[in-house]
View 1 (tube, rainbow, N blue to C red):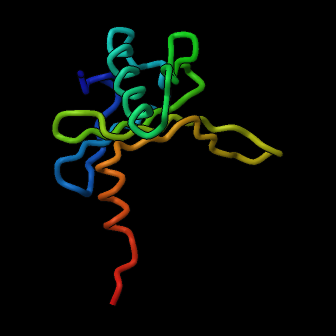
View 2 (view 1 turned 135 degrees about the vertical axis):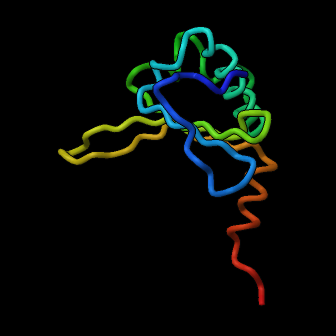
Length: 120
């Protein structure tokens, strides 16, 4: 899957070696040709974490609508995490609505281990 999903966006340097983070404030800027493979990768991560019997993201319910923003995290070869979100005004204040945030299980488990309190 291509990681060059929009030339106007640059990858964010990850503090952890081997990871690349990309942020797309307007998900509709991701090219049409890149969307099917990215949507499949996102649905595959959801299927790993939930007992999904059908894809969550589809052409009819797309994460590439201009109302959404995306954060994508890649390891050396694959998409390993993503967040689909939008900003809204609620009672006159800005709020973030997360429509989906998923991480592949091995990475989620490793992150939990790293951030868990250590026993003395």
